Image (cartoon, rainbow, N blue to C red):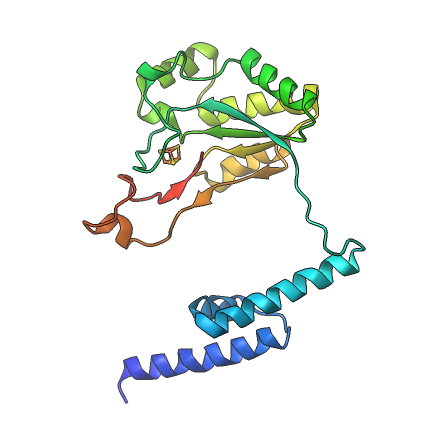
Length: 221
Ligand code: SF4
């Protein structure tokens, strides 16, 4: 048996074991969860049914069976400039198409207050990824306003939104280092980034490329 066949066989056994464990509602470790990403067809249906049952039991145990919760949020488009060029993006634009590279602090607070008055609970900061790295207009605006970079401005705006409106900032500033996340954490109960794909084929091949930036196949806005 070739080495490749042995690997396939081993993976197959792990998959069967992991699937059986999931169906029996046993806790899965990381490797088992990873191998179950291969699930398709009936196996996938079975996994989804188990996951739904687990969710329903959790809701029942918490005393709120069948209840789906959500929080109203107001969007704060802090800047529509971005260093990336995702081809599907309808959010990012160029400096010539916006009045200012960034919303001013007054504009941010006005949007947040309008959201507060409408019953929102969260302020969703939408923005491009580090626009100052691509656009001089963004870098100059930040410099004139006294901020080292976009993330510093995001942090500086999350604080008054939180303190003056009570809305919880949810930040979507793009790709960040661990240290940058830690810096924003005290002013934002949640942060997000939508990952479009982890496939390298989408940007390394000629067909289907959705971004000109090989390190980020994602949607942030
Ligand atoms: S990173 Fe986000 S904002 Fe920037 S171009 Fe891509 S989808 Fe648009």
